[in-house]
Figure 1 (cartoon, rainbow, N blue to C red):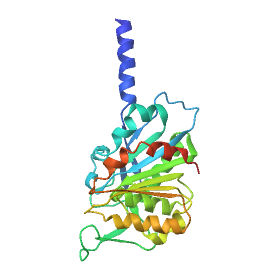
Figure 2 (tube, rainbow, N blue to C red; figure 1 turned 90 degrees about the vertical axis):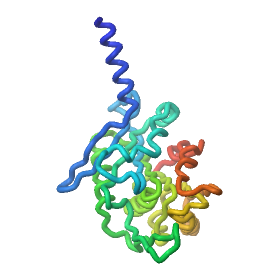
Figure 3 (cartoon, rainbow, N blue to C red; figure 1 turned 180 degrees about the vertical axis):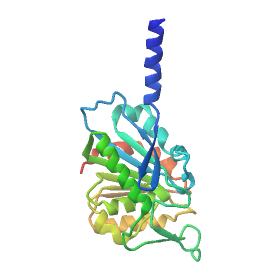
Figure 4 (tube, one colour; figure 1 turned 180 degrees about the horizontal axis):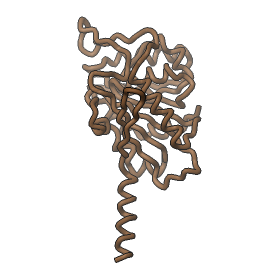
Length: 254
């Protein structure tokens, strides 16, 4: 009986280690739900890369679950866990809030309905994300040369903005079907970017990614752009399937 109990405990621990743990950041009067995945065989004496992923508008809320709909499978895969042991964090943006300072312009055609702020102004939700990053770094031994950020749609926009707000923080970024203000390129130029977008995106125009790529290119930044022909807004499916994405991401150091 004792041997069976030990085996059950080992099995339970193994299963739990494969899942994103549910956590909540409380700061003053605000809260930020988030999920965190710790590397297998985590060693508190070692430092680990940190990857934060920003979800899209459709996953906003307070259930601390919906943000895992897109992409979480990639980081729980055996390949990722074995080859890229990292601390992975998925925060959840509240309803009616946004990771990005952007306004909808309803006079524009489909896919073009976004006006990005010219200045890096206050962003309540990204401030909470920054507080979360501080918390994670206090709680775990993070390799400060290997901090990464990615996101899709609204989270792709938030990726550009979060890097612009913290130009010397991240080692690399991968925004998917997002966009930003090309005027931020001077703040973004020291961070390598791999930008993804669907050519037929009817929600967020591919032109936003093209303009960011062009602006960063003029700054002689390290930037890649991958556009998927005949793909609409769900270009994250293609991006997550890129065989070189994780290798490229984790090969970058600040």
